[in-house]
Every structure is written in structure tokens, then in C-alpha cells.
Length: 208
Image 1 (cartoon, rainbow, N blue to C red):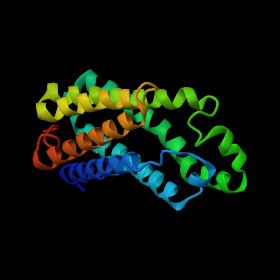
Image 2: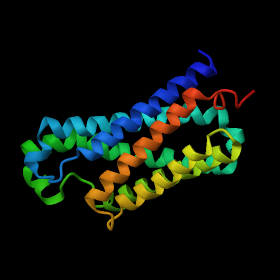
Image 3: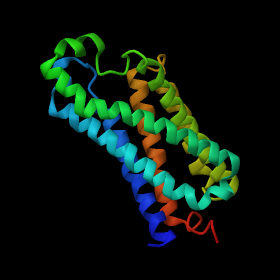
């Protein structure tokens, strides 16, 4: 196992992550009733979202590690922020895949009162915070990569714009359609970073 192999694996992870993220958000059910959450489709959508989180975090780590010194403070701040944000989001997604469907079948009154869980108690605060950390983290990391000459400027700018737009889409004023469109754009930006990393030696050569 060498740095080139790890970088290529990370790039592929980013591509798959972007595809899974875009599809899961665009296809996410509008109504979160107990009947909806109990369906296999609900589990599939959120399993894909979990896959996007896992591969996205692994892929980003594989690409960031050899570029950490060159990405500087912006890169470090971005990576730490997105790491924390994605870990928090995965916690909710774990619930949505393994726990919420069980509750929907056996204790539907809980789902009827609290929905899928994103507005349940302290989660209503920490879930939006996790989203903010994630999108700002990717924007900062892309900026650090761009300044270091690791990531091509058009790809970095696309990620920065998509990340900020996704943050707006996830906000209370964004709405469902805005969330779906901006999620697709953010997924496309992840794919673009993965493709760029596959085509360029800048990531794997950053430690040379």
C-alpha cells in the first residue's frame, strides 16, 4: 500500500459519496409519517446516506492527509470542522436506519410526535450545527487546497459555492426543494474533487 493507491481509493470514495448523497437527498420522502419511516425504501435511502458519510469522510481523510502541510490553517480548520460535523450527522443517520423504522412499527406514536428525530430535543440544535460545520468545513478545505495549488481553482470554487448553497438549503428558510437542489450540487462538487484527484498527481505528490 502506497500513497498513490490510498489517494486513488480516497478519490473513488469521494465520487461514490457524491453520487449517494445526491440520490438520497433528491429521493428523500417528503412526508415523514410512521407509515413512511417503516418502509424498506426509507431504510435504503438512509443507508445510502450513511454510505455517503462513511466514504466521504474516509475519502476526504485520504486526500487531506498528504496535503495537510500545504493546505495550511484553512485546510486544517476545514478538515476538523467537517470531521466533527459528519460524525454528528452519522449519529442521527444511524438512528434513522436502525431505530426509527423499529419505532415506526412498534411505537408509531413516538414517530407521530417527533418525526424522524431531527427535531427531537437537543437534536434540533445539534443537527443543524452539524450541517453548518460540515459545509463550512468543506468550503474551508477547498479554499486551502486552492491556495496550495493542490485543487484546480474551478473545482475549488464550485465546492465553496455548493457548500455554502447547501448550508442555505438545509436552513429553516431553505425549504425542501432548495435542500434537494443544493444537495445535488454539493454531491456533484464532491464528485468533481474525486475526479480531479484521480486525474492529477497533486494530491499524492504533495508530500514529495
